[in-house]
Length: 304
Length: 304
Image 1 (cartoon, one colour):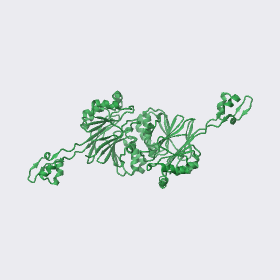
Image 2 (cartoon, helix red, strand yellow):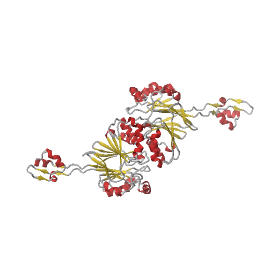
Image 3 (cartoon, helix red, strand yellow):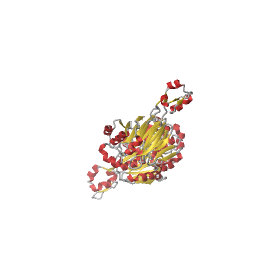
Image 4 (cartoon, helix red, strand yellow):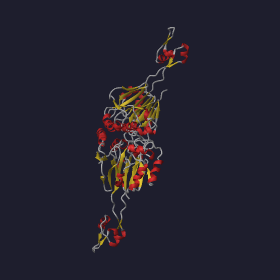
């Protein structure tokens, strides 16, 4: 199977601690790295975990709070020093331009590639990027400022053709791809063989969603229904539920409730408040509602 | 003696590595922290080394290359989240406003204190800050863009009065401070006692200079003559001398030559190029010329 992995670079929240740095993740698919969020220290974490800077394809920014964007200027400069020539596309809410343009303008003398900012729509479920392997969708989250979740969905795959059927019907090579894509086979004698007889179903298309920062919001359920892995923020424990509401964040139980209602395979919780030295309580509270929950940590690799 | 310490937070150069992060230092004097440069990850290093955020008094930025300033937005946000109300003054070349203003404007809703940018002059040796304990001077370095060195100079101290002379002349308490400040003492009988007879010299005023980024430049010698500790960039080894010239940086030997000519007490070299996994060669080359040389490293404390 094609490699489809997520590596957590940072899963802290606004205040960095000795335990967690601000938000950033890398989604690796088919040799390309897609970054989600880029808090301060992201490029340092890439170095630490040996992530290949030259594989970085594009960046998806959920929202413009500092702990999700302050790593961009450093990363952009470093990519230039490393000789990047390919355009870098950043998917983000429009206002990122206000923050990034002066930096780009000031340092543009050294920049040997283009940085394109593609604005995210604040409403609806929208495909924002696709290549041969995946489609990335954005959808609105519920936060103090415009915030978007991202769904990375592997494209539908081809069916597996049965070796013994190729031999039995002496199927010519030129027909193989059509059959893998679902076509029936018509023999030289004119007999039509049903595709289901010739093939087995494709490997399931895997999918990963990132939902941070957000309050508890059931309106995202249709977008993340039955996905493989959901990363959902869980800034607070149940004891800080009022604070979670006030700051428009989620508790661990709320993240778990979303995972349960969406019937996902696995939940990873992150974006932890700096107040927690130990995260046992958050994990426990989430597991009470959705047992297949894991804690994010810097360096964690999630294999899909 | 009053505490006068420098802690290195980062001593790498433009490209961060697993060994070094970009430039930043803290000068601690009399309970206050003065920051010099603020590369990406500076606030994370403060956390790591347990530096007290609430002691941060002001920030001195040598020049506007990204590896010396990209940590400012995150640090400014964090100070605000931690409830800072005191103004924060940043001494920097004027253009910092272009980079920082949009960030401050965008995030100003949350900012509960003022950030003042005081422009550095590009020429001359100028006092830019003073309090009861120290004076900070800026002076021009030689780099690709305007760059300034900083001298932290403890103020002249009072002389030590001799206990036995107080007893012998029965000097009244009201005269003590005058004598400590250098005055002679006139006895009730009208006899004038020379200050030198009554006192011993004060502890020497300590001084620390930061010179980074800069090419080899003898014109800085008058400003750093006989100081206690000189931090001088040494981005390259002698084998990269041509590259050092081209990029307007210094080699370790050049840093040592400056230290020798300025007759300083100790040299600390830093701002190491990412190409060096081991720094033995740089240290060796510097020590050949100036033996009291030390390598900077993240976390190093220099006691003056």
